[in-house]
Image 1 (tube, rainbow, N blue to C red):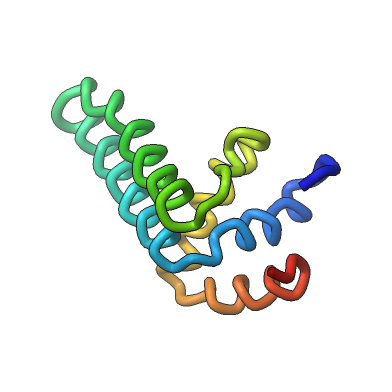
Image 2 (cartoon, rainbow, N blue to C red):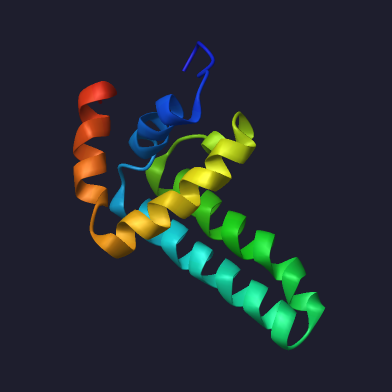
Length: 111
């Protein structure tokens, strides 16, 4: 992408288009689930678990991008929007809304 995206709502379909590969999305889901687990364990059991949250989240996500999606993670250019979008993608996956978002992103960013 050559020009800078100016709003989060414009960024969202771009982010989704960068996650077309189902294995990449599944790895994001696993990583984000582990992030939640680390946060809970950090509060309930031991604060050291908090250090594992970014490792779990980014580790699984970047494995998905470099290993399956074959692209550069959007977090390198848009770190805060990417974090926000990852949590949105997580909930949309839980709610079964990602197929519609993928279809919309495919229209805006054809392969």
